[in-house]
Length: 388
Image (cartoon, rainbow, N blue to C red; front, side):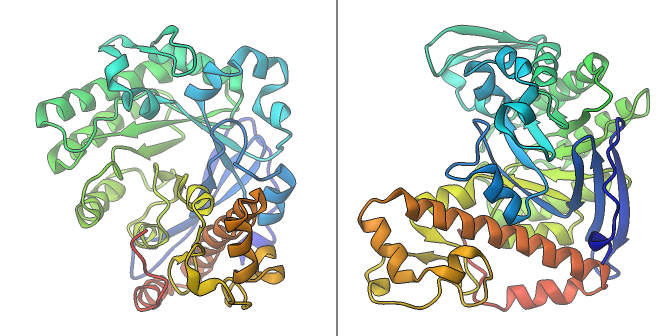
């Protein structure tokens, strides 16, 4: 398997190498080279919104095998401030993580607070959720903040409409996001950072195509984008509707660069989206689910608050090799939950992240071995399929 013998490549110019494509699906596997190491794809990125994956140390994340983590530009800009983080040597120095980091632009967070923002073609004005102070971001401002944060992969500022949204609103977001992608690229000057553009379009197939076409036109006119985010999904639309639309979007994006489906972490969605040609994912679902006392498993979701686990001394997931499953029983974790011990969330977070990271690892093997269609079929017929 190529993962076992690739030399670690540190590069000032991020690049993507495609290693294989499954013969019966659109699933791909490759490696994204960054200044802080390599990201094997398909990849799930644990979310560390405030420069921390909730409950875990960087040593634990390293032990889990995470290639990359995600941090949030909006929250870090407000607290503790990008200037302080820059003084600490960027996010890597600030949090002590020496592997790749992706920062999202914070656009989703801003637009989810629609009652506090003012939007125009030049940028967005918004109010801090911390102290109510007023702020203004243009695409150029956003790039400057992400430069200070020092992530390996940065995302353009985009407009993310909610679901449902009127067609006119989505069409405006497509036009505006494309223009902001162009301006973000012009403002982008740090060669070691990979800039991703983001496509929008909601559930309107023609607007999805228009968004991709606009980005490809910009991409062809100068320095290429290092990859492409696929935004505006998993915001409330029916799951099947998302998958049907996603298939066309993924295939319309360039094959020589990574495709990143933003904000998706349902294990079943990951398996299906990889088959459509998606390479990267992120979501708070595994950590949030852990804090709610639930675990992903080969038997579907397990709610450890349930009384049926009170005397269950068996392994959390009999098919899992994580440290939680190796050392602790369902009954013990349920006891910790009922006792309101923070260790419950930590143990379940370790397990849930291991579950998704291992799922993507197995997917990469299946693609290289040209059996991803079989991998999907086995998944769909297993108890692990669950609507989280």
